[in-house]
Image (cartoon, rainbow, N blue to C red; front, side, top):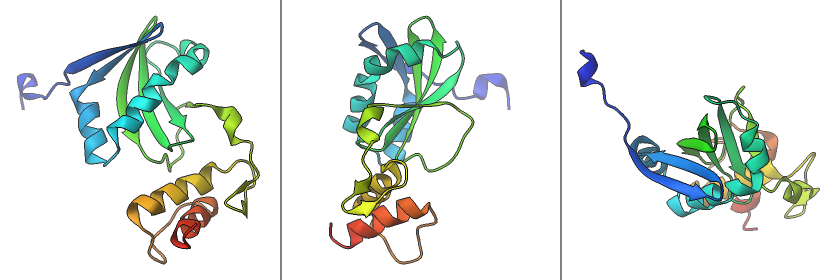
Length: 162
């Protein structure tokens, strides 16, 4: 395969969010639709980025990182390009794996509850919430959820009709 045959990503939009500029390419948009993520929820996460501007500005140019909105369980992958410029690379719902890539949580102060729909949580209720949202979207069948106990408890709560 020749270099000229490689597919390139094209920037389709630049979002000005306060002092931040986020470039969006066609591949990232394709991933949102492929993963059946509501584009309005991704837009909501991106519009909240000025609230964590200080943390974003601490990222080194070229560094990749995740930004998670615990309210929707949408996580976007970004890369800092330079100064106030970032590139939206991907989106997932929910972030179900560990990575050495740093994660910034939006509105972290909202995660101090000790229970979710009456079910006790150990640290915060993000796992319960993720499982609940996943089960509401996809449905849960016994034995098909290999995630954390907290995630599974949230999914079971959704199946139970909470």
